[in-house]
Image (cartoon, rainbow, N blue to C red; front, top):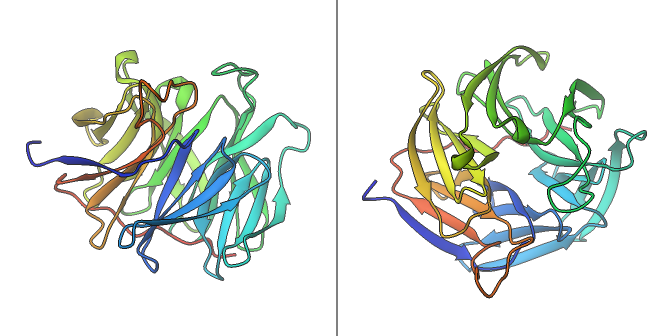
Length: 296
């Protein structure tokens, strides 16, 4: 742990920074500000940031093989064209739940996009429970609902051999695993991998390293914990100079840096000036994998 270094690389007050994705082709970090209703792209070589505004809360943005991005805006999957800064709808879910929105999303190794929903907050941290669901979007833009009764759909990723899908419903305080059929996208055999203690924080975003370890950001815990899913224990934790850590991904030229987003919503910026910033953690001794692009 003595070699681990934490740097603030994008100092800004994102209301809810989330969903970091390292774009290998651009050598840039893509991430969103959910409540700020923006998609950001930051280039570390030039320390420059570009942004595209959305007309609703944006839960995630992922690269698209045909160009541009697919994002979850409100209850819709949308296409984002970066040069023109245009956002166009693809398909909507949950027409019967107008108070829901997309939260986290990620693409599987064959280009299928999985994303979950949650209710809009009535006031900070207060919303109707069990209103969310987990969906997948296939290349033909067909949508499959995998399960419902979710409180706050959050972090998701796959094992190195793609046979396991890891998933977080934040208010369960649990990181769960499913058996995953990559060909069909079918989920089965849900089981817990690790349950967080309240003092660790609320499990939020997640990514997997090349050794199969899980890295989970702990909202209100100010840390990222490293979980060994084979034995279901936390083997390492990394503390950040913020409390509301939200999500993480590996990136950089060799995918050996862990980028971590955070939130500033409800925090006094005078007392906590770094909340809402994005951080780079180096020296962890593991690497991540290039992200997958949506195939549709």
